[in-house]
Length: 366
Image 1 (cartoon, one colour):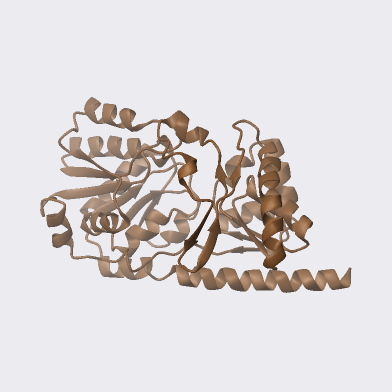
Image 2 (tube, rainbow, N blue to C red):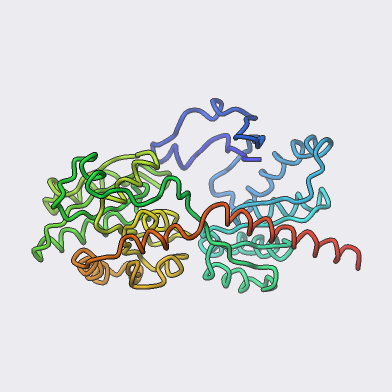
């Protein structure tokens, strides 16, 4: 079940609304998995009330499904509003549920009502999976028993994100072989920190380091920020040195990652930033802000540098050192590719199975 909001207000306000939701089928097949896209009423500013709207949409559809498909577990993703919805559905269908948290939960916890419902729901889950240890500690801090919380980091698709021949990748995208290249990727929104990287490039060029920046990504749902980035480039007279590549397929992003000298993520909020893992898998050293699971992704100076959030001076210093350093790119690629999505799936299945078994034991005792 992958519910779709009837109106994607965030996309509408950002001016990035995609094709009408009516163009998305209500049922489709993804390889051998049947996927349903029920519609639900999402209301901006409704907060925890959106949980009620979500349950009201899903309850009749899951009831019909239940008649012919006796599922044993509800597997939910994100702490708000999905966790509370999963808890209510779990009670309705008398089966346990698992919740995976991916990073936005710390922001939702700053709202009293959302925090209350997240706590209420997560304490009832048979397992809470987090993508980073930092997020796991957050969940334990909400009062969830530590034995029911585990960290399962994301993986990468090594069939796409692997180290390519640097010269060939550069030639394909018309990047001169002798050019010092910095890469930043992600939606063109403020949270992703492209503006910090642009400022760093301006500072580094003033210091005599002839670096150029490639930004891969398109408009996002968190507000229109692309014009601000272009204005900043103009303010520093960086037009010849900052290149906006737009949205590209995953394979092309991997080519940029293989071509670059350093990859930079300057976000101020993330859960487990897959893009860092993917860049490492392509052999690119990474300079990233200390958000979410970044310290787990970059555990050693052999792979890159972690800098404090919103510390422009530290970012510039780390980028300068990284751009001038000789890196062991095959070793970086081996580390980045050391964890696959198949491993992630296996670990999730094991945790879910243990949760089901424990839930049955508790039911028998009670």
